[in-house]
Every structure is written in structure tokens, then in C-alpha cells.
Length: 329
Image (cartoon, rainbow, N blue to C red; front, side, top):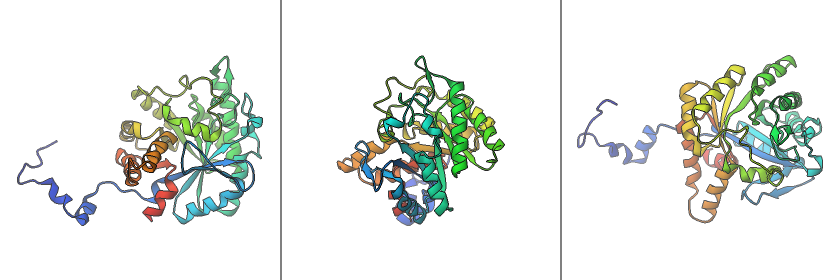
């Protein structure tokens, strides 16, 4: 960096003295356009069930979803992400409930698309909510079979697109799945359905509350390190993103978020593609519990979300979306 002044002629605090001045020179902003709201769906009627590990977050039955969608639209949140919690009786080794046109996600998609055209719907493509072992794919000899899993993920993607999903979001981390899904979507008349690739998904310790929410945590008997990325690696993220862009991804995701701000910046600097961040359940729980226990104040939420924007994220998947959207209006 060139010499840009020296004290006492240069005083950077001058620009910080007044609120109006600070607002004029701020480099990053946060708006409702930056938010994606994840919503958990469960079976039953008139259900609003708390998630113990995520204070303030709930699982809802489909008959209560419309109120949430109306709230998102009213607050100008562009997109919601739908995640299912299905009973153990519907889970099996191959996750076949993912291909049931009357599963929770498909029912929710049909309902929302029938009544609300103006909001984006993002659907997770992975098998962990549907398998009785908690893994994201077909398990053979305690190893997730990549190519067999691809066959089901492709069918799951087409089904979700048929039901009205706008953004297919494969989070499984199987090799080659973006290319296979893109080809299948195009072949089946879904050329304009977008793909958000979880291109950089680390084998993280921050996912625990989410796994509780979708009912896979107690089923998972081993880790996911043979398909999710090693958190010690950064160059590998570049290779993952490059491959997924080549295969047809419209956006890419970095997950988790706050511990990986360096990765978000690296991806954004190397590829001029929209990069989304996922402020995952463990991050949410840490901040929320800090606020509830008066260790943090509520401004920590905004600070955390702006950090994603500063790193280069185009949007953030966050459980704080509805709450923060009220303040940003």
C-alpha cells in the first residue's frame, strides 16, 4: 500500500466522530435482500415445536407454513430454505422417502407455489434427513457410495423441480453431482431452475443443533469426513468451487460461515460468482445463548452478518433472518 498520509495531518478518527459521517463512509451494508431464511417442516397438524439446541427456532407442520411465508414476503426476504424432519418409520438405508412425491418437502412446495409466486424456494438435496444411518448418501460397507448416491440425488432434484422448487441446493458433497443434476434438470424441462452448490462444506463441529432439528444426530454412528472437507484445508476449496462452476452451478455456498470467512473471501476473489454463506446452527446457538445469558447484546447478530458481507458473500442463510429483517426495514 502506498503512503496515504501520516499523523498529525492524517487523523482517521475525524471520519468516525459523528454518526452521519460514519454512515457516509461505511464500506458494507446489510439489507433484507441479503437474507435466506431456513425453515424446518415436520408432520402433524398445528405443530410449532421448539428445538432445544436452537432457542427461538421451531419445527412447523405444513398447515402453519403459510404464515411464515407471508411474514417473509412482508419483510422482503427474497428466499426461504426448506428442511424436513420426518419420523424414523419413514427412514431407511437408501433414503427412498426423498423420492416420494407426497413427502414433506413436496407437499410444502405445492402449497407455497400455489399461493405465493413472489418468493424463492430453496430445497436441500441430500439424503441425511431420510436415511436410518444419518449419512448424506447410500452407505455400503460403512462408506458412502458416490456414484450410487448420485442416481438418487438426480431423481430427488427433478422431483423437487417438478413440485416448484426454484433453487436446487445439493449439500451432499458427492463428486460430480452438480454436472449430473444440471444435465437432468435441462433434459426434463427445468433449464431455468437454479443450482446453489454447497461447493465448500467442511466436516464441522458446528452442525450439531441442525442434526437434532432434522432428526439425524442420534442415528449418525460415525463422522462424515470421507466426503465433507477437512477444516484444515483451503486450497481444496478452490478446486471444489472450480469443478462445480464448470459443471453448471449458478451460485456456490461456503458452510459453516463465521469460522470460514477467509474461504469466502478467497472464493470471491478467485471466482466472480455469487457466493453464499451459511451461518449454521452451531453459530446461531452460540450467539443466541450468548444474548440470552447477557454475555452478548443483540447487536452481535448484525455484526456477525455484516462480517459475511465484508468477506464477499452475496447472501447469508441465517436462522436470524426473520428477526433481523424486522430491524432492517
